[in-house]
Image (cartoon, rainbow, N blue to C red; front, side, top):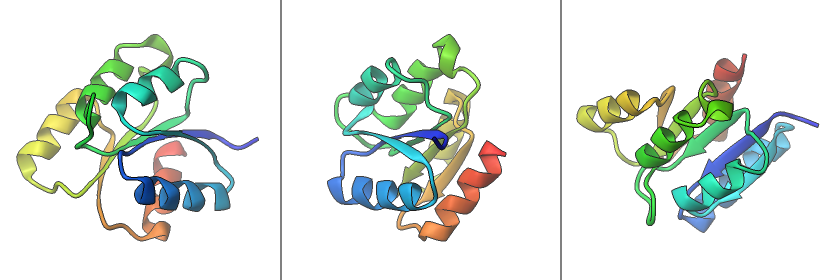
Length: 121
């Protein structure tokens, strides 16, 4: 079985595209509809990587990253924000929360996979 990637996005179409891209590349995907859902699902099986949207209801991407960084099992996994936001201050806030990287939407599937391969090693 491939590495597990937890993806959180409130947009069904983005989740669908991300999941399709990742599964085609051999990754196992756990889908979450927001940060709160992602936290609940991360408790069952520790992902190898988190790919999260920034702006979501219930718990945003930065809150999700902070919460996962506080759990021993997820403290050192790569966490990438996949968002339409590109302001420097948001990137700094993400980095301060523990984000490993930042991909701006819309993204190209090969760009997404290249970043994931790079951070997963």
